[in-house]
Image (tube, rainbow, N blue to C red):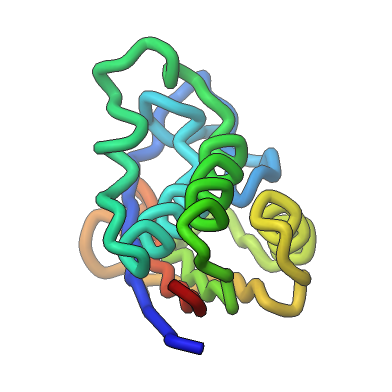
Length: 159
C-alpha cells in the first residue's frame, strides 16, 4: 500500500452572536468563530489535510465562500463529502491528527465527542482520530484570546 500525507491548517477570529462549533460539537463559550460555513476549524483543517494528501486541492476550491450553498454549512457534512471523493479515487484514510491552539475555552471535556464526530464523518474508527488542545502561552493574537488555530495531518493509503 502506498502512503500519502497531507497537512491542513485553519484559523478564525472569535465573534459575538455565533455558536462555537469544533469537531461538530457545540462548545459552551460566549463567542463563536467567524466564517462562511459554521466556522468549524477542526473539520476545516482535517478537510485540507485529506485533500492535500490526495493532491485534490483545498477546501476553498471545493466549497468556496463565494458560493451561497456553503453559507452556514455543517463542516462535518463537507468533510463527509471529501471522504466520498477519496473513496471514489481509491484512497483509504489511515488516520488524522489535529491540534487546536486556543487560550479559551478549555477543550479537554469536548475532545472525546469531537473524535467520535470526525471518525463518523470519515467512516473510520475513533482510534484513528486524535484531537489535542494546546494554548499559545498568551503569545500573539491567539494567545490574547482573539481567535484560534487548528493544524491537522492526515495519512492515506491506496491509489
